[in-house]
Image 1 (cartoon, helix red, strand yellow):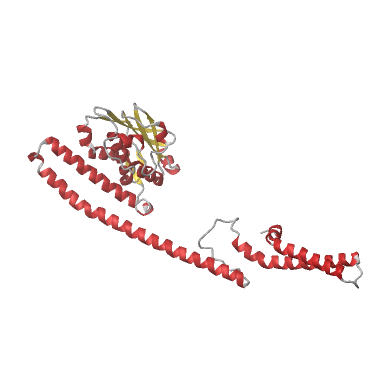
Image 2 (cartoon, rainbow, N blue to C red):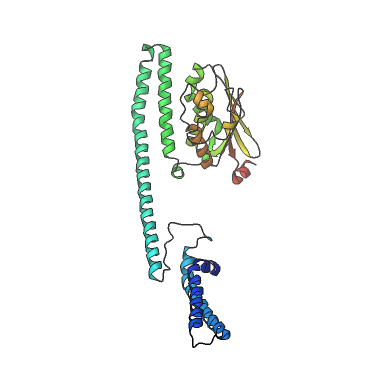
Length: 342
């Protein structure tokens, strides 16, 4: 706090001082035996002004350290910043109150973090536990494949696949904040990752009579295969969902000076221009999600974008309504990796 601002805060004291000077002069004027000498009055006012200025300067100096402890303009505010510069009782009262609020806030935050961690641990446990009965249901479903009509079997398999994908979304969503503890960057064949994901979606391609093609030569990328497979599965799932029957889905692998590109192009309904900047927002389904007969959670692309960013990849979209959508996933070249390639 500057001295000028300090004087502004003490305007009542200054008004009181002027009132005191006025009263003093008035008393002198009322005294019958007192000869008014303006030089004496001037000296009196000057002397009182010096004493007032001295008082204000000393008071300002004593409080300056306290104000500096409250001034966080040169550093970001922190909940770890406890006050300790109080010198008088009023400052100590404010200091104890603020420090008490900080302690209570930290306790509340820590409790919230602990509760959130417990919830994440439960979700992780639940996902792993639910996979056991899901695997058993899958085995039972295949065992009765010849006993039920083919159409009903495909519908049953579709619903089972949706459940499995939703369970996977829950698991990856819960692990989003703890991503740094659950990934391993290695060299992987990009084509192998793509093919493994496409195989899991084979029934959808058959039922909707969708054409699929994989173009471009295989490339080795630095990534985590498990997380990239999940990202690509969300993109493929969306492409299948919004591509009409007898459409076409094309995956292209290519390289540029930026890195390796994985392009997923469909001939679906496309994404409105006003929706394209929001499709990676959590819970956003857009016009397509509202009009589609299939339910959309709005989490698939949100998770794909967040996981891609955490892996150091870049996920973007290009789309034209009525013509289709192209999802682009870039695996940038790292400097040391680029040197090895050359």
